Amino acid sequence: MDKIVINGGIPLKGSVTISGSKNAALPLMCASLLTRDEMTFHRVPGLRDVRTTKQLLLQLGAQLDDFTPGTLRIKARDIVEHTAPYELVKTMRASVMVLGPLMAREGRADVSLPGGCAIGARPIDQHLKGLEAMGASIELKNGYVIARASRLVGADFSFDLVTVTGTENLIMAASLAQGTTVLRNCAIEPEVVELAHVINRMGGRVEGAGTPTIIIEGTDRLSGIVHEVMPDRIEVGTYLLAGAITGGDVKAEGCVPQHITSLLDKLEEAGVTVEVGESSVRVISNGAIKSCDVTTDPYPGFATDFQAQYMALMAIGDSQCEITEKVFENRFMHVQELVRMGAEIRVSGKKARIEGVKKLSGAHVQATDLRASASLILAGLAAEGTTEIHRVYHLDRGYENIEEKVSQLGADIRREKDDMV
Ligand code: UD1
Image 1 (spheres, rainbow, N blue to C red):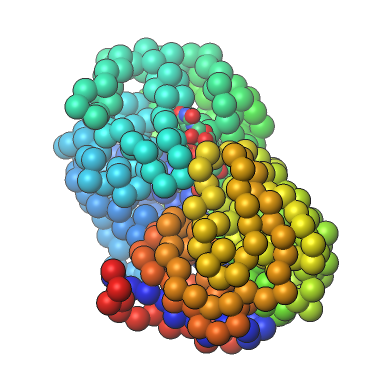
Image 2 (image 1 turned 90 degrees about the horizontal axis):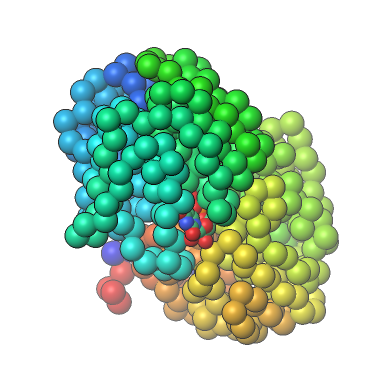
């Protein structure tokens, strides 16, 4: 296993080019199962979650061509397997997104239940309820969801809560179902909009994506297309927060600033200068950070995927603030690691109370999940002395070339083999 070693205290300066979005690429790859034709994606990020999805698609019978970096061709002419095995689903929950396409095209899918994970229970009951509403029979056996249907039929289904991959799964399922499906209380994340846009370009009929009510007219056949994956909004925000926490001047290029409005508002409130261009955002910080409360919410609210990184910033705030995590239970695993670096944070239920300190100090810390890893990198970049972050394999799930990118901004960071784990 690897560790990341950072000698902190250097203000980051320069430009960083944003990679394709993980959370857009994964459902799009799964949507390739909806057609026998070839799908070509450009700007596919080189991430472990993308590799896991490739492995899953291969197992299901798809042919893959990924010889050109960033370009991925997927052709699921025939589907030969219908199982998403535990070994893959446990490392990447997003594997459950093959459920909708498999049910739509084949009428059968055996998908391992994701089980508990580091950021809470994260059930998939809404995915299953939606499929049941569309006529699927669902059985739970040996830790697997066994779903069957002769052909899915359109339904009127309302999600009990807003779920991103749940919305995506049911859009995919409905796109090849018989008749019209109305999905209510849908997630309105940009990645959902992108998936709907792609399905429409494939010949599907999805209306209303980006609003809570989505109407899908099922069709018999979808065709292959070429598509460039949207930029990763969470990566953008992470680099901007890196600029802010180090008192630096960082420009993220090749992004969609409107996707991160709630974060940009918070950065400005925290005293960071934010300059928004057409496809770029620059932050300039003098390192003096005002403490500001935040509550996570589904899009367009403050993304839970920024919560850990924002907490690192607030750890050096000028007074006190409160961060409320409303989307996931138990998403404060990074707190005890930030505390090891000198942060003053107390957690009570869904709230973390942060008393800003003047400086963080380097320490040995453990990454516990993807965004927690990013939070520790930010803390390490700002801290005095050396920080060693262990168990960084989480990081490779979601950040393409992060050490190289922050090195180019002037950071002293390197990856080494880890003897401690
Ligand atoms: C997606 C993102 C993830 C992000 C999250 C919230 C992908 C691949 N991942 O995850 O990066 O952190 O959205 O923005 O796009 N829930 C249920 N039942 C369900 C489904 C969800 O109770 O059937 C709960 C979850 O436990 C959680 C909340 O709903 O508390 C939101 O989860 P959801 O939006 O589904 O997250 P993901 O789609 O897994």
